[in-house]
Image (cartoon, rainbow, N blue to C red; front, side):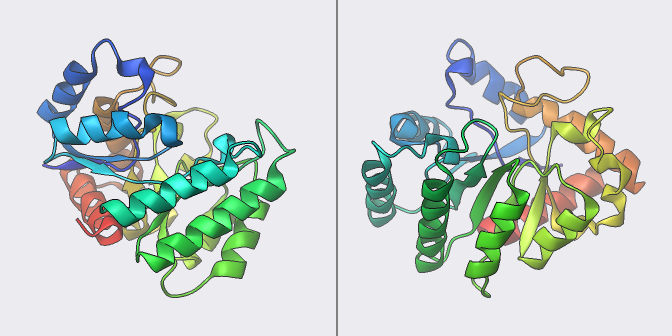
Length: 256
């Protein structure tokens, strides 16, 4: 069985004390593919180091995270993404999108960054990985304006309604399902089985959003097993079947 974590920040400072142990533990539990989203230029070297250490398991994205879209650094950060794309291959542009939980004052600049990076994704024929927090309407407005056959990707950490799930899928997006599906108040468990499994990928977003029974603690890629088990319960399929289908879905998106 091969399990794919389509979204994990393994380079995070949260893993500085035991990163190798965390990776090895996940691999031993059949989590063998780790897709690594970018945040900003400060983390680039840490991402490269991770890839160098685990070249068979680590797959990098590049992009500017919406919470790191700042007027004073915007041009530099976007240029950094463009420079990286010219220098070497990546598997996606992400994570990108809109976050209105932390700061609403940068909305216009976040939209500008989102649209610009979507254009880069199309230019380099790459998927996008969307970060959306309290911004479904704004995200969908951008996707509507940029929609085309070559726009596709993953709606990371999907926490919306069934209607929003169906709308995301109509924009050629898979739904990234993580620890929230195990939460009592997460709500997506109430309709997820009505969504065809071909539209689902698994993720942890570690070190954030640990599933039950680890909720509130540091998340790890090995904890994706709890997400897998919950989907097995919801869909009435074996964990092996869930792992196989969601890994195939990740290959369809990332091309690897």
